[in-house]
Image 1 (spheres, rainbow, N blue to C red):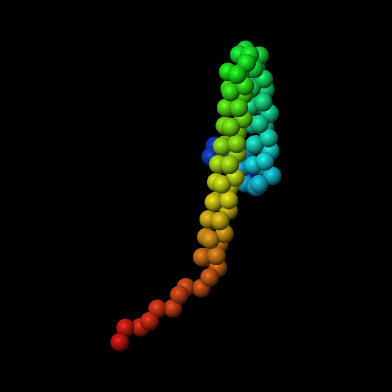
Image 2: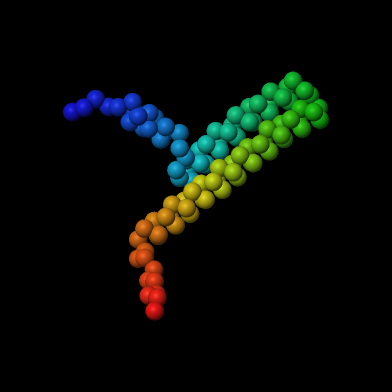
Length: 99
């Protein structure tokens, strides 16, 4: 048996950082949200009043935007993969012979 090549373990490592399913996406979004809430609480402590609340809302808004982008990209990639599979399984279209 041959030792693993550098590209094989690098490829396996890189696959760990690819979001493939919606539950994985929601786990990532949850992690982003907990970090944003923690950071927002720090902002409220450092900047009491309206400024701290505004920074807290900015943290939460960034999570909403990132979460939406993650879910949209995931939906796009799944649709693209389904389209590619449909193209592979469908027969080639018939062409008319020139007369």
